Amino acid sequence: MAAPSPTFRRHAALALCLSSIVAFTIGAPTAGSAEPKPTEAKLRAELAKLGKKLDGLIETYAAKRESLRKAQKAEAVAKQNLGKAEETYVEAKRQVDSIVQLRYQTSSSGGLPALMFSGDMGAAAVMEQLTAQQSAYLEGFAGSLERRKKASETASRLTDEIRDEAKEVESQREKAEDVIRDVKDRLDRLAPTGSGRRSDGSWAPQLPTGADNITDRTRIMRDAVMRRFSLPYSVGCYRSANDGGEHPLGRACDFMMSTGGTMPSAANNALGDEIAAWAIKNKARLGVKYVIWRQRINHGSGWNFMSNRGGVTANHFDHPHISMY
Image (tube, rainbow, N blue to C red; front, top):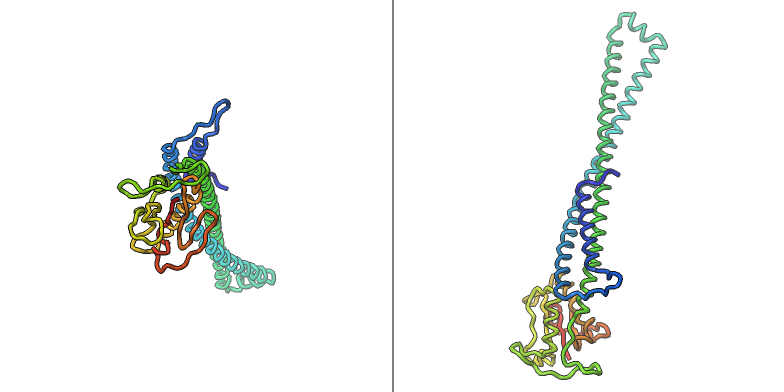
């Protein structure tokens, strides 16, 4: 394997930097001291910093994959050209060997000297010239063959090098994602506790308050979601229409993943999955009654499919719905 390229060394430096961030983020306690409890602001700052690092690693990885694709194509062409050159070289060598053999046979039988002394010098001269030309051609082609061989080896080495670099960047990406998951878990442990929780774990009824006309418990949940996730669209909570749900009671919010009754993008679908999972995970802490998302409902014991209500929004394909006690 060739010495690491400058790009690879830059990636190694990035990996070292990332390792430092990992150590700083995880923050193992020293002897005789308790692990400090990070604030939510500090964790969010770390999460934003790691997110930028992760984006950089993903961009680098994508570029490496493209470089690898081009290098593999160049390697295939180089190997194909080398194969053709080797075939041509073998044929040229065969022709030279045939001429040499013919000269040997005519010389041993007295044919060539006889030709030379008989005055038929043209045939001998032609043979000499042909042999010289073919030998020169073979010698020149041998040099060309060697150059093609080196080009093929260089292309193969470059392909291996880029593949190794891509693997290294991918490894660093996975480590970054592990750290991000750790930070998110720690943020989740800082999730607020809903108001009105009784000592037996039940939730006291609450009336809607404030200009948004929702309960304090619902407001705590809504604000926690808005802090925890980067939401692409609006959040709707109170709705006066009485459809038998929690909205008219100020006890539910819809977190929109698209607009105009259209299906969300793949990225926003994944975000909706995260929000729904987070709400279920923090159900007992926040006072979540149930979550509806993508025509399914979860009361805390698993997802169950719901009947078809006739549309993207009605079936909750474009927003997770969180209802509170």
